[in-house]
Structure formats: C-alpha cells, structure tokens
Length: 360
Image (tube, rainbow, N blue to C red; front, top):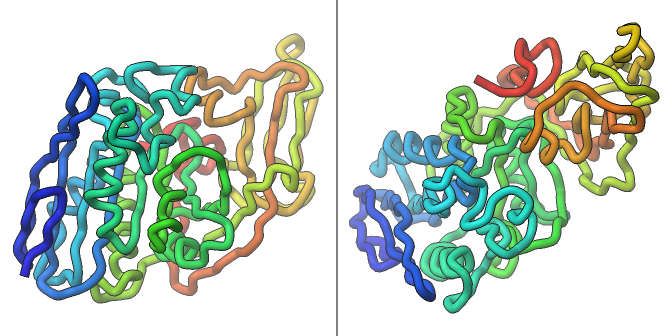
C-alpha cells in the first residue's frame, strides 16, 4: 500500500524527503516536500510553513518533527511543505517580489493567495498546486507562522473541529476565533470539510529553539488528536479562548510622552484594576500614568498599535501622547488542564519573561 502525492509515491512505513516543481507564467519554483506514509491506514495531516520569508522557526520545527517521526507508529500519513515561499526566504523578505508595505495587499502575499489559480502570479500558482495536490487529499491542516507578537493560535468562529485542534495542540495559551478577510489557507479548509488551524510563534527573522521544542510536542499532540498516534495530548495548564472582535476589547492610551515599563507579559490573564504597566515622562522622568486593566481578560498587548506592525518595523518602549498603552480582550472560555505543564512565561514584554521582546 502506498500514498500518491504530487506525483510522488511512498510505500507504507516509509518516508520521502523530496521537492516539487511549480510552473507559473514566466517563472518556475521548487518547494520542499516531505511525506511520511504510516504503517496503518488513517487520515492525512498536512503541515505548511514558510509562507513568509522572515518566518524561520516553522520550517525547522517541521524538519525536526518529520525526521523524528517513526512511520511504524503512525496510522495515516503526514505531508509537509516546510518552505512554501523559498524566493521570499532567499531574498530575506517577508514577501516576494515586494516587501514592507506592499505585503499588506494581496498582490504578492502567499498567505493571502489561497486557493490560488494556475495562471496567476507566483504566489497564486504556488498555492494552487499545493491546494490541489495536497490539501484536497488531506483530512486536517496546521499552518505554522512566526510573528513579533505574542504566541497565539487561530481558527474560524464556530468551527468546533478546528477549535478542538487548537486546544489539543496544547502548547500555546491564547486561542483566537478570528474571521479576517483574505485568502488564508485555513479559510480554505471549510470548503474541503476539514479542520484547519493557524499557529504563531515569535520571533521573525530568527530560529527560536524554545518555540521549536514546544512545537514538536504540539505537532505530536495534533496527530494524537486525529487518532494517528497513540497517547494523550500533553497540554499546558491554562488555555484561553479569546473573541477577536475588537469592538469588545478595552484600550488605554498615553496621557503624555514617555517610556513604557511593562509589568505584565503579552498574553497574560489580568483582572480589572490589576497593574499592567507604568509610564514615565521624558521630561522629569517621573511616573505620569499607572496603567491598570479596565476589564477582566487577556492582555492582548502593551505598546504602539497595531502591535504586529509596530514590532515588525520598529521595536520600542517609547510612546507619545495619545498612543496605545494597553489592549485587553475579553476571555470567552478558560480551560484548566489538570496536571498540565506550566505555561512558559518567556513571552514578549513583562519582567517574568526575563526578556523584553524575543524568545530565545
């Protein structure tokens, strides 16, 4: 018995480390293709990463996971494309051919190009081939990304199967139900009738070994959740389901120019009235504002808004009058996993992390 993926055939109990060629108008692209054919029948799980060229932890996590996976223990198949966008990675850019502000459009953002089309730009051609050669043959998907934000996961609102996969991944505390516009790959999954999740670990532009350690556990948890491996998912002690509807969030802004000194990490649970940070003005360097949580919830971030762009272009703890200081999102559900592992507080911003911005 064998599995056929993108013209590649792999016998049960075997692995293949190969690549596939993607032809598009005036160009061609080669992307890596990993296939693990389990010794027993079961579903096919697809892992993708490297849609953006500055996101390096996902590809390395997939490599280590697949190399360490024993196909004789596996029911079903694992198919992975660790670098969906090698041209952006080669150019050391988030997107290709354009970087910076242009990647916020659909013009060349591979992450927004799903399910693609055969006569489109290189991003659309790439997603078209992966969608039709791999996703249509899969029963679940995890898309691995990196960010200069705090770790989080995302699934579509009301998608209970995808929500369960997020909880079963088990290594990230924050889970968002988010309906954002654009052609992200997990938004193609409902059309295929399969669950799809987004996984985000910091930082950009660097390999994060802490996140890779956690990812290896999380990826194994996903296969356990799908009945592909034996065992019980190993979760952290506390997980939070957060509504990403920003109309329900509470925000606090700076009363003066100053230096923001954080006292809580991004992603931490906070109670109404709890101190989040303090602001010291530039001119006398005395405390001018004590920032406390306006509601019970999750500290989405502290510092300039929007946080993922602020950290992408300029990481700074200085703010000006009127700028965002704190953003708290209400929690829909708090899941406490009895006997769960302690939550790693090596998050961005907060003295308990021992760091200011980046995981090691």
